[in-house]
Image (cartoon, rainbow, N blue to C red; front, side, top):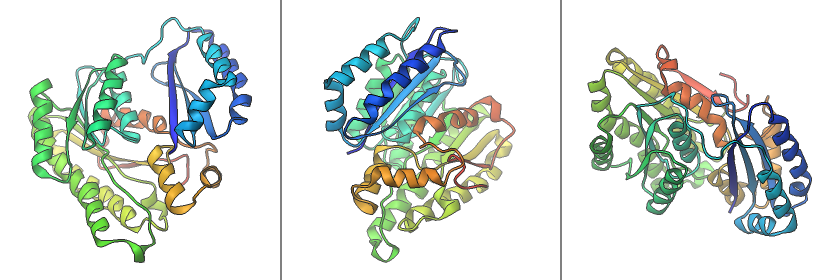
Length: 348
């Protein structure tokens, strides 16, 4: 099972070169470690002193073995030596006072969305059907000093989405942002897709987007303003074999974005669609590993990256900047639009 580890820390102004040097010093031992896939270092554009290091591994066992070995211990010392006036997620006020609901917030992209929104001042509802993952994600974010709440939801059920919105309103009294991130997908040749699998995917990915929007709409209408961000997919623009059912649902989400934007625009509500490309999430890589290219995760990722204009793998955190833009006042004159964040794989 592919896993990732993220370190978040502050770096004192003027000493950025030291973190870059530490990163370069770590890479040789990482590349020599069994099960290592990739690592990247990135700086938060909105919070210049905030940095994140993200490593990707083929399994929990590989990560644990590295961490317990001499190379892992040496790299921990390097990380500890980074000049950081303080450690922690860092919080800016870009979304201060706002309340955001993220469906599918307990896994994959949803976790990065919840963290990013909360780091910029929003109070965030981590809405998900997976009880264990939802509670774990909320606990981790709370430990980071972020204001979040776990909320159970099955987006394919109208009563459940209404209860989700009611719980958020009871706690915080408003809903400013909805991120429709909940989705399911599997891979199979089109002639092997089970009818039940097709129906479930459309129930969650398409009906769920409608029902969650419907549940949060009254609160936004009362405020006279709101942001709905639907999560689409680059696959709709490029077409992927073995994903006919999934690609169809994401095409529907793009169409729904345009239609809903027209209906709710006069009420001050903006609706846009963010379309990721291949992101280094556990679900994406496990799906590839088990269903398409068993034992060839690294090779498959390399082939995909070679088709991008930007030649490195995409991570969930790469989507957060665009999400923040679509969730904030910065995008008040933008609605009905679809933005691809895929490293330049598809051009639209």
